[in-house]
Image (tube, rainbow, N blue to C red):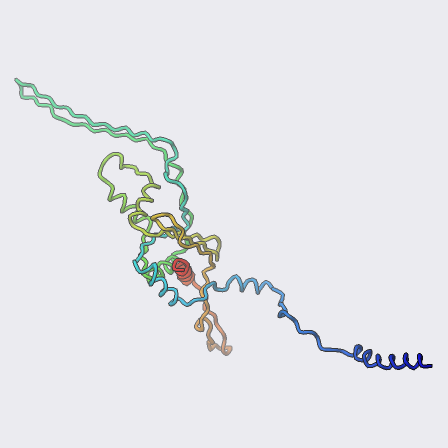
Length: 272
């Protein structure tokens, strides 16, 4: 009898626990925020987002205080490779034939004097196939890029101009100077007229690679991979009154804007 009473007492004590387990309870808090599934629009917006977080003024100030303090000279190669080719000659040799002669004679008892000179030159050369360089970025992009570098205190030199200037300085009228080696002339021009070489390559419609080299020792000063999209400002979006009411218009990013943004990101990388 006493055993049955004990069992009944235990069962009665378990009833509240069973009832409590049957009722609903609050969900346990999540340790991580729920993730929103990525859509194609999300991926497109992420690709078109700016990669710069600092202001342009902060970047320019840091650059001018460091590298830009000495007014560096910078040559820019637009979609032009700067590789290990040290000569543009395809053959192992080039044939150069030149000659000079003179004739002078005199007949003692007569009035005939012979006096003349003769010069001859011939050159047979074979150059590597000169293919036209890849199409450079659009003029507007170059304009924005150069203007931003100039604003930072960089002197931008043109590759073709320094080649011609250097060749003209070396010209002395000798036959050997009739056809200089293009690759060696390019390196001589860079060494005389530039401190840095910047190689800008447009990989696709909105992907750019920028590499900055020190002309003195070939050190890589910066490498930048960017879409060239500048950060948005309040002026990029504004409400405009139309005949259909107010409409929100967004300013389109121009190629000049992209060029300026690429220059800013490159200056930022150099001054780090």
